[in-house]
Image 1 (cartoon, helix red, strand yellow):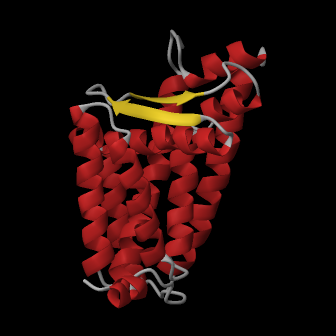
Image 2 (cartoon, rainbow, N blue to C red):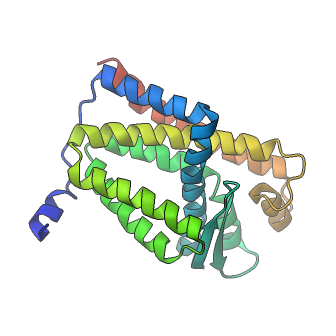
Image 3 (tube, helix red, strand yellow):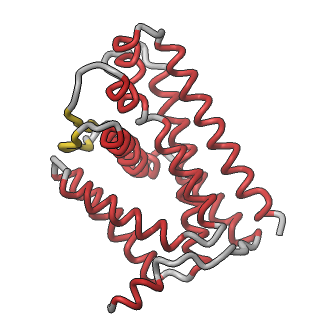
Length: 235
């Protein structure tokens, strides 16, 4: 691997034409994976990973210090950012978790069909490298390493069309997974320390209104994903 090869693999290639039948197979496989209990129990860790990194990234953008995060065996997680206990930065950081998988999923698909799959994969690798340093449990390290290895292989060895198709499939998993996570927290009998409950405590805005903001963002992300995928299926 030399600098020129790496540079070539971080360049956009222009719009990628995804034929309908192979893309349909990818989408069906993604939906089946999300719908099958044992498979979803594994994929949930990936959705939770994006959720926690959403907290971390927005926290850093708000001037907070990201010190670490963990993924747990029950598929939950926790990211720690250091900064003021209240205020807009804390609110934005807390809010960012549930929308993050849907926003990232829609962005992955949108960028992939426009030829940006390779640069996106390279950026994901950088984020995962930072996440690995901040991992605070063996399970977290394992998940980050597995996701990083798969991402690295796809970035270095995958054909342009394969990269795009996989990212569209991952985008679908993240968007559907975001809806499943939101449904779980919305239906919880004891919200406890969930993000919407914490937001309600921080702002005195009712929990249901925070849930509504999540629904709006997830709905917009779903719209973007559908607008990206449906035209490709028709070709």
